[in-house]
Length: 256
Ligand SMILES: NC(=O)c1ccc[n+]([C@@H]2O[C@H](COP(=O)([O-])OP(=O)(O)OC[C@H]3O[C@@H](n4cnc5c(N)ncnc54)[C@H](OP(=O)(O)O)[C@@H]3O)[C@@H](O)[C@H]2O)c1
Image (tube, rainbow, N blue to C red):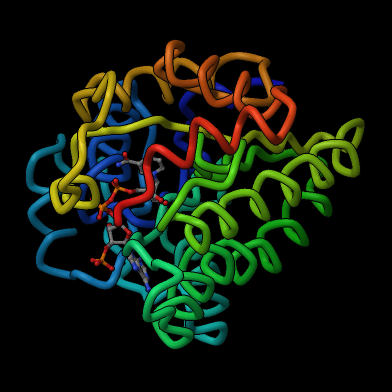
């Protein structure tokens, strides 16, 4: 089922809304009439975001998604202030290349905590509330890197592959109980996260365009919102190739 039309009786919760895809999506959904509860650690950035939307369209709930207690409190505060969370988009995420040379376990586990833990924590209160109500919509932002392991992005891609697996399982479990679970798999999108990349990023998508595609996807029925189509097909094809051939392609990305 698609994200229900905007309603004054509830809101859409977006994590990772202080910048990039989450911020652009918050503005796009607010423009389409949704009441948005916006979360991230950066309270000032959230306030600035709210200032760019119509008055009261975006309410700010500063939050570190790795803090389980704070996530539970925030979910309750949102429902108290903005009404039931009708939809949620889990967008909080982080990326740092981690190579085999100098593999840094602490940095790797930090990515796991934000990218994977940052979805698992809010799922607890949301699934409970939505399944009890018999309605709800959850979109998990993963990445096209989830399709196949890419050099120096194995930890990041691993967290995203885990999210896709989780979304696939929940999609089927929740189907028929009024709760929709989707996955969003972007390719390269122009944000702070990719601004640090020092390699070519084919088919780079402007963040506003990404937000429009995701908002349209939320209003549709497909499980996977994957874009741009060129990168989506390329990564799917990579995953379908015999590994020997796929490795011959990804080996070209390894720097000596
Ligand atoms: N850009 C791309 O090409 C691309 C491609 C595929 C997937 N994605 C995914 O899209 C999502 C958004 O990325 P982006 O490109 O928009 O990057 P971004 O501009 O760096 O945004 C990341 C967001 O996550 C928030 N965040 C990070 N750690 C957090 C924490 N511990 N608690 C709460 N919020 C936290 C950040 O806010 P604070 O720092 O204020 O907390 C920020 O709002 C990520 O999940 C990313 O993996 C991006």
